[in-house]
Image 1: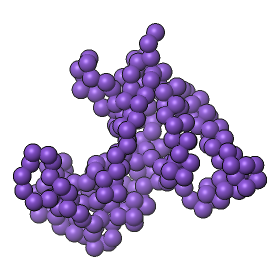
Image 2: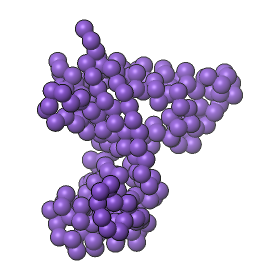
Image 3: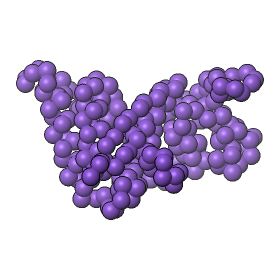
Length: 220
């Protein structure tokens, strides 16, 4: 919902550039132009404007293994650009968790987050539709996107390949970094909601993140 409202007030091309870069581990002007169906110079102008506003900066992205040539210039979001995307870490949340720790012991923040995630299980079970794992995962990704998570359900329709949910933004990320045990709690929450087993990998490239949740049906 937040991103939908943001799009109403942002220049469409600016929003598309920021959104595409956020849902990646960095993109070049050529890659953005291809995704947006625009000319190289048209996209370059918008990127320059966003860079002048402090929303984007660039870095030299190493070539893929086996590719020749110099490192490629790619765009990434700055701290200011990332502030456009929702985060549950703010002064109130941080103070609340710190106060819980002071008043009730070192495990109190984790217990509070566990209670929050337990409530989310019931919320998702009410809103997610589907009889198969693919249907549930697709529905889950849609609901999560409405909450400000940037994720997509990826499936190449090959029976031998596992189903994946790929996530490029998590409003809880900073909280999970401070309380690492709670990240595993979220994985367990997703597994419970989707009725499957989960393994997860995390990738961070020049400030951009990518989490891959690999889903496998629970043996009957």
